[in-house]
Image (cartoon, rainbow, N blue to C red; front, side, top):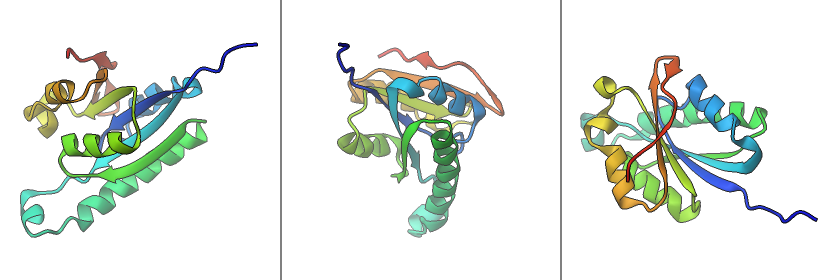
Amino acid sequence: MQAHRRRKRLLVVSNETVEADVLHDTIVARADATDVTIVAPALNSRLRHWLSDEDPARRAAAERLERCTAALADAGVRVDGRVGDADPLQAIADALSEFPADELLIVTHPEERSNWLARDLVPRACARFSLPVLHLVVEGVEARPPVLAAA
């Protein structure tokens, strides 16, 4: 009799990049042994943030997230999704309190277009959370393969 192996838990943090084909394919490739939670931080402009008008940002994130999780579920992935805090580090911390992940996958635009990379999100996540951090850069419809970030 074969011992039951615990499924790995993957926490994905992505917003505008959440519907990228390469992200979908990366997650589907692991679907047979992985449970996935995707957090889409509610990105907002500074003006809307100061005006406490987060509804459009949360709505846009929720719509992208719904399309992504539906497509992944259709592909056989055990997936959950939630809109998170506008600060991606806080969104990760909040998600980890409910979903103790084994790995963290941060999905960004390329460096020249990414606010998250400009704010050093990947190294800050490596320093703050004690789990492997993968970084996937989405360039339009194509992307670089995920790489393990240096802790």
